[in-house]
Image (tube, rainbow, N blue to C red; front, side):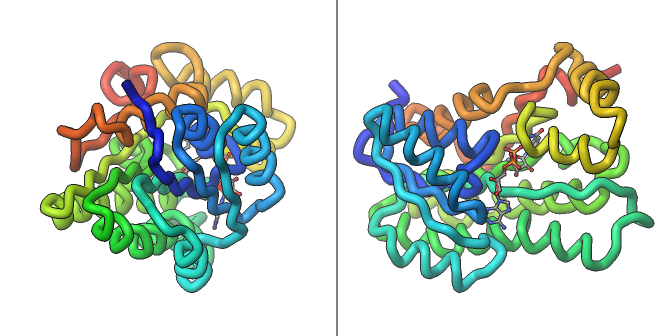
Length: 254
Ligand SMILES: NC(=O)c1ccc[n+]([C@@H]2O[C@H](COP(=O)([O-])OP(=O)(O)OC[C@H]3O[C@@H](n4cnc5c(N)ncnc54)[C@H](O)[C@@H]3O)[C@@H](O)[C@H]2O)c1
């Protein structure tokens, strides 16, 4: 069950948080992992850890928002069975506190970045007779979250984009699903608390933990386990679906 032996998995943003946990777990399950990262040093640490545990891992320094960089990376990867579009960035602010530059920045990484990787990966999946894709969405695509205008927009786009891909590539045996985490404790969360709530870090951390009815944030490893299932052959009947992993955030917050 859940073996990824002989599969090649491309993971964006594998240097930190959820992407790091996915990279390590996929390598442990036998996949050769290919990490595309802006922060090559962090990705190399993930790769070194995967290799030390007996896995196979490669790192490619690239900015996923830049199509030519992404195409150049995929030109170096012979086989792509799995793509996890995980890299993403946040912006805190309502519409009036979202400048055109903020909007473009979030769009370019979270939406166009995912498009760039899909654009490069799908022909390679078609060539080998199929593949599995997981795109990282968010509960922000499901419910209205305070001060997440640009971010929510980008994650809604991820969900709609994934449905389109799932539909268009049914006949090519390519499955495409999304995962929608609520708050997961990663450097991404620590970073935006530090940036946006200086001096109130503990209070905000507590508040964000309690916003999940289950009473805590998720763990990157919990999201990785779901990604593993969705990318495994055991999930062969699943496509065009979103999986919230949210401690009850969407359905139990009443
Ligand atoms: N942590 C959460 O609470 C949470 C909740 C819902 C969804 N998500 C989503 O999960 C994904 C991962 O989040 P995380 O918390 O692990 O983030 P993180 O910040 O810990 O890690 C993201 C990684 O992506 C890389 N990255 C950023 N921009 C890039 C670019 N342009 N090109 C290549 N690499 C780039 C970063 O260098 C970083 O290593 C994101 O898409 C995020 O929106 C996170």
